[in-house]
Length: 311
Image (cartoon, rainbow, N blue to C red; front, side, top):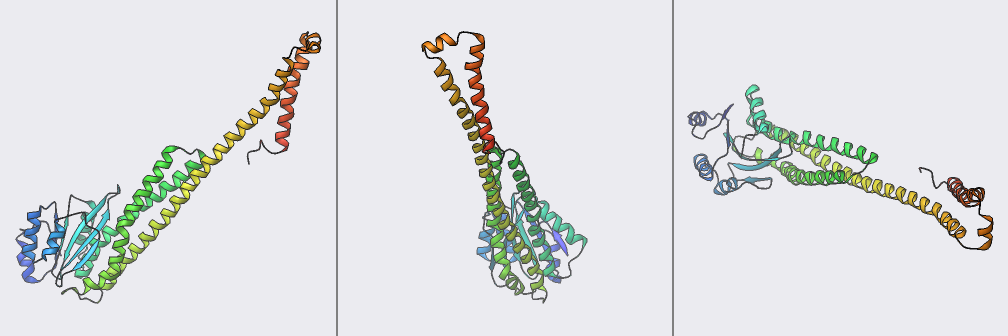
């Protein structure tokens, strides 16, 4: 199987005459070039129009002898990669913007190990795009674990922002993965009905991609639940720290309450106080001593009641 990169490649007419399946891998095409590709390969006008407007949702359109599949992969940095597949029994045309390692890896695998059937060739490209979700999801899982461990130590505003960022990323992944899963649930039959792709094992190849997409959807849902739990943990940790600070302030205020009373009492101009508290011993004994005793008594009471415990 040959992988070509130009619609003007002189090998295309020869491959079409021999009925040999090939992959035309195009990137960065203008609308005029896409229209030219459609005219040369007899693509449906609606398929040409869809490929001229990127930003499509994942879908599979059946046009009888050809089909248009809009499929996504994920770059390691989390950016989605939109690929338009035009498929027939004689060729597979992919249109995308930019140079992506995902399709390059699929191309290397096809060149290294020649597919035995057309269905296997299509499967390898779809499989490379589908499997690109797993490293990104593994990174999300590791980041959630890191955030949860850090929040138990010391919660911060940055951690909450990271949680919301991960939540947005999972929503974007789910917006892509769920439609692709639904497409492959029935898409294998549609692709398998195209002339030249009626092999008995077509459904098996596409079912494998579907199984991976089901697993991806389940992982996304489970990580969304983990994020909800992590946010609850953040709020609970912040609340517990606030309660601990409030308890400490309450203890300090309560200790100063009798001290304020003692200083206010001895600050009155009663004759008994004036005549008897007139030496350093009386000052330290009655004045300071009563305040220290009241503070120690309150501390003993708080410990006995478990108020100063860490629980």
